[in-house]
Length: 82
Image (cartoon, rainbow, N blue to C red; front, side, top):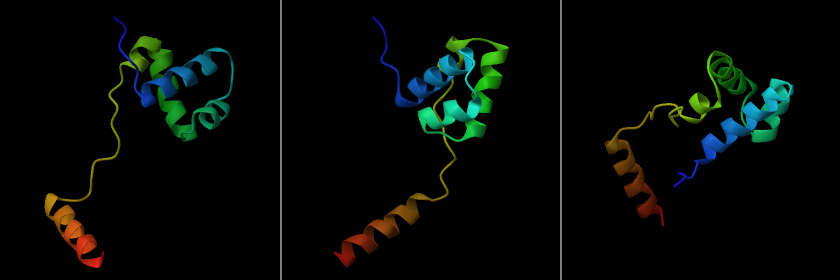
């Protein structure tokens, strides 16, 4: 059974295919909706290995800045306002 790819994985694979076809990183970034620097990061992985490693990258983003207490306060504030 083939596992369904996440949206982030689909973006990485599409950008990789574009890079392999000779497209510029800026074109790939615009096509998949990410920053150009992100495509350069993916290109580095692609240059060092293959699309499978790019697909296997962990989908992570910037770490959260808020604590559970912050979210609790925000929830209470929003409920009070409504």
